[in-house]
Length: 285
Image 1 (cartoon, rainbow, N blue to C red):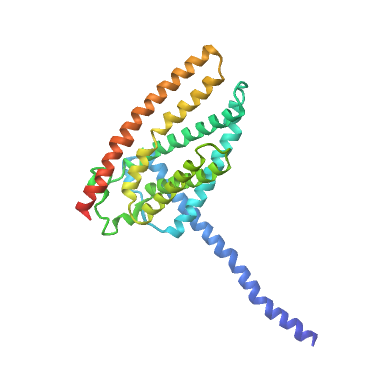
Image 2: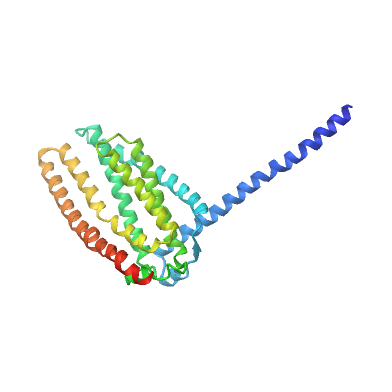
């Protein structure tokens, strides 16, 4: 009877041990696939920034896979979130705290504005490198050609990386705005970030990625001088009388640059994109 019980236990445990042994292999396989895709995307992005034209043209294309790309976006969002708060708390905030005359609330604001300027500036630079080297960049009619044929579902790896990074950036901004000290425009900023995430996902999924990356590129640059102007304004409030006027002058200059860039990118150039969406789109579709 004892031998029968032991034999039954062995037979009962053996399938469980085999099943348990298979799970890590599946997880490892998924991790390896994601790792290879991350390497491919980042290599394509670096090639678009620093590589030759011949190397950029040789970059691979891949089809949109929302279930797989969602994993990439989650990884990018975690990395950007850690980068945002790591640099802010470990580097920027200690430096800003040296200005003892500045209130702690102003220190939080200037640290946030510096990180916003870094993010917007970095994505503006990346967007210029990536979008300008796409075959559909100009004329604008190319933004719509091939949409009915499914050509927009195949995206070059550098543009795909830029798109997923952009989506991940706004996801981490949704989380960041919720854990930051609440401001008067908390609801407005939260709605803005959530809508930005929805629009990027929908345009990526439904094949409107060409016109979407053009819009993404146009909306970032003007925010760089805006946040730098905020930093100068905060510094002027915490500076002595002699330095105060210089910070104010620099803030005024940066705000004037913001006004010019806003007019060019968001009123003129973005206005043309809207015109293309209304009129040129119907000529092709």
